[in-house]
Image 1 (cartoon, rainbow, N blue to C red):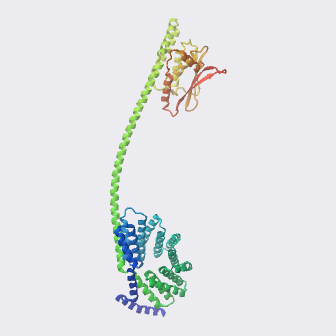
Image 2: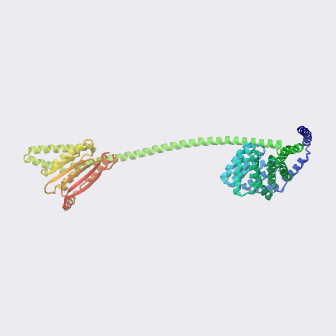
Image 3: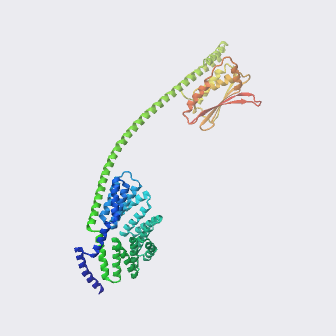
Length: 590
């Protein structure tokens, strides 16, 4: 019966309200309109507009942006969406034309973006609002603006709350509270607590919401900000409504309404009327419930009329068109840049290839010249070696010794040594045409050489060859006639002046996988005595045989990883008397 009475009452009450709306003589609306008009003419907005004119004259972009955002926020607080959007959009247009943006400019950009997002939330354009708030948060993080981050997270929490994503809303409100705690901003901390409480009420956690609101009630009353206090009282009334404590709910909601009517905050009034309508419905006072519900509808219509919504939609479309045009323009520029870069890269590649070809040719020419120089040096060394091996004194002495055999009618010896001499000369001549010979060939040549040299000493020099059994002489390569200078030195500086037995021994051993060692040992007078005898001679010939041999060994070793080594060792008996010299030659195999 009560429900039927309420429906009949609703029908009769709706007719006069509709007529009042049509004729435009609703007392409540007239009251709100007067207060709103009075606010637009307030000194605050007038001062901001005057300041805007001043900074426009001096062309101070930073100050201009601050004032534009303040004007936008002032109009938004009074729900004049069109003016609010105009001022914030003007700020963004100025920022778009600034090439070098400092932190102050970036801060103004984030404020304008966040403020437009707040308007989108009020117009229920939640997805657009979230996109803008994400942009604002990125900028605020970049410049490290804690208060800006707190505000952006607060607004994003509201957007998430409106689309029903309560967990994300609660997380953002808590982030905002955390940043505000760092700033120790009590007023904004109250707003955060109030927002958290509202989410908890929607989630059905009424006791937790009540605890949250009680914590800030006294603080809100002490601060005395009427707008914030109205919101806290409204939330307290709402939570008591859900807890079925109707008297307390009525008390706080009416206190909130009283403050809201004085300040004419339309969004607070709309929420308060909705809660009072729900409270009176809960207490079965349907007439009052209907009255409060109708007032909330009137407030909503006043806040956002069709013209405002159409204006915002046209502004959104305009922005979308501009964004699309800018994207097309940006893509065209990027394509042009890409073409220029491709041409530049192609030219760079051609230049690099040409430079590489030039330097390659230069390096090859240098290498070729060095190679020719080395080959020429090797040829000169070989010619010099041949000249030394074909020493006129050696040839003369050898032939002279053979001649003595002929004179003495020692035909057999003469033929024997003449045959050896011819073989030796042939070996020497053949060696001038090759770079390497086997160690076996080298030792045979040295045997011939010793046979000829020994003629002058009446074969008194005992020549011995000791070859290690694990060495394959046919596989080891050495420069031709490389041992001859060492044998010659041993004979003429060590053995020629020695009285008594004369011995010259060549030993070949493999000391490692990579090396063989050739030792030439004589039992002559030693290097010290030989040097003394040489210094007493009136005519000294400079011997270049050993130096030339070292150069040949050095060139020979370049084809291997390892180097050759040459060591002279003076030999002494038990009485420290010189008993000969040993030459150790280490030749690489790999």
